[in-house]
Image (cartoon, rainbow, N blue to C red; front, side):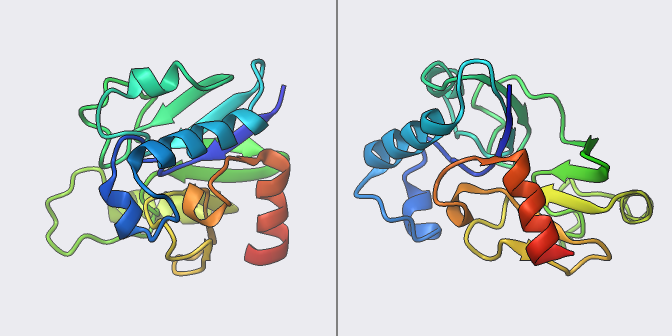
Length: 180
């Protein structure tokens, strides 16, 4: 069994093609390619943690086409997709590293103050004092690694990872080579 990471598939959401400059003809082409890429990597006994924005709606239909056991964190576009999520964020260990996982980068600040899924200042302090790095999505093609917070954040979104999930080993490699 292996674990994989992904984010921001946006299955069924054709507008993301233009927004994130994705190289797909249309939504059907994008959905097929993203599902094919995931299935080439994720096998039936593997786990994939999808870090938000899986699909706008009908997520269960897309989920049925994917190999492996998928766990979903809620993203800002997941409210109507009928896919059961395990929460908004989590802490876990990868090898001997402590990581924080959330769809939106942990250091993200919303100037309007209306989004309730953003972290409080106290929670940000906990993340920065207890974790080695963070994993996120949400930023699409904007960056793969950010040092905007006190700990590095790694974007596991499909837009910066050749439209496929990354393995635990690849995530650690990104951290050790690009983020540390």
